[in-house]
Length: 173
Image (cartoon, rainbow, N blue to C red; front, side, top):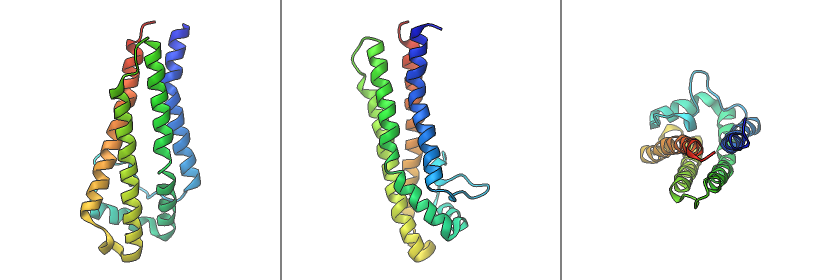
């Protein structure tokens, strides 16, 4: 394999490894937030409703809800970590092609990070309200905001990674 191909692979897999390692670490630091047969809210590509949030958090029980709170607080740091890794790879790709750093791929990363923060902040607030008042504490409007933010985060993150791959494939060798 040529040096250029190895460099491209390293640039592409850097944010992937950062993401997988960070997600794994968060799982270790906040265990017990899984419900059999259900995806965690932050991984639902189709979003979620107030009743789905109620069902998920109810199924978690007290210990699982505490784990979810820890996870959500840790997840306030994670967007900066994976976002920095993706941006570093995009900057390195721009240097490889000998041109300026393209702003729009970085804007996509920042949009994904912002959506992740919105998702987490709303869920932290709603989980607190849920623990205090049960389902009555949930706001359908806020849950909808978090749900949209989740979808934007997931789509933006995958689009950023695909865009990185495309730019690396188009880079001169």
